[in-house]
Length: 240
Image: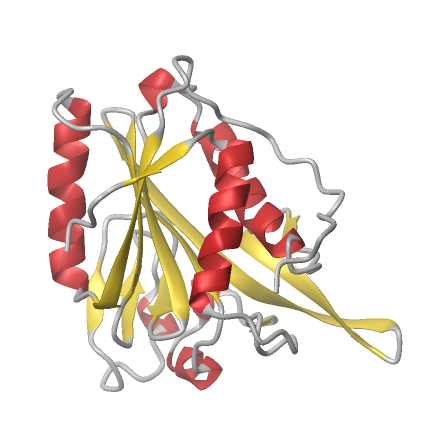
C-alpha cells in the first residue's frame, strides 16, 4: 500500500547528537490504558536516570476516552459510553480504540534538543511524512493541535477533518504519551466527546479516505518517517 513516491512535505528533524537508535516496540492485542500509563511512567523514570534507552511503543487500546489537562467537562458528551481516564498529557478529550494506532514516544530531549515547540513540530512532521507514503496530504493549522486533511467535494474544498491527535508531556526533558493515528477506528465512537475541544471540524481515518490500509502498513510508514525525522530505530521488547 505504500506509494513509491513520497509527499514533497519537508519535515523538521530532531536527531540525537550521538545517533543512538531508539527502541521500537509493537504490542499485540489491546493494552489497558492504566497499565500502559504505569509502564510509561516506569520507562520515563529509567530513561531520565540513565537506566534505559529511548522507546517508541506502538499499541491499540480498547475503546476509551482520555481527558488531558486542558479538558472541559462539557466536552464529554456521553460519559457512560466508555471508560474515561484523566491523564497528565497536554490537550483535551480524545478517543482511543481498536483500529487506531497509538504511539507512545519516550525520547530523551537532553540528547536531542531541549525545545518543546521543536519537539511538537517534529511529531507533526513525523505523522505528515507517514501519511505522505499513502499519498495523503496531512497538514497543520494554527491554533489546532494535531494533523488534518482537507476533504473536497466536486474538486472544491468542503471541510477539514482530523486524522491524528498529538498530546505529550515532558518530565526531566524525557517525553511520554505521544500520537494517535486513525487507521480504521469506528469513527462513531468519537461522537461521545468534542475531540480536542474543536466542534466545527470532524474526524477521519485512512480507511474513511478510501485507503484500505492495515495497521501493519501504517506501522511501516510510521517507522520510515520516524527514521527521517528522529533518526534510526532498533526492534525492542514491548513493555506489555
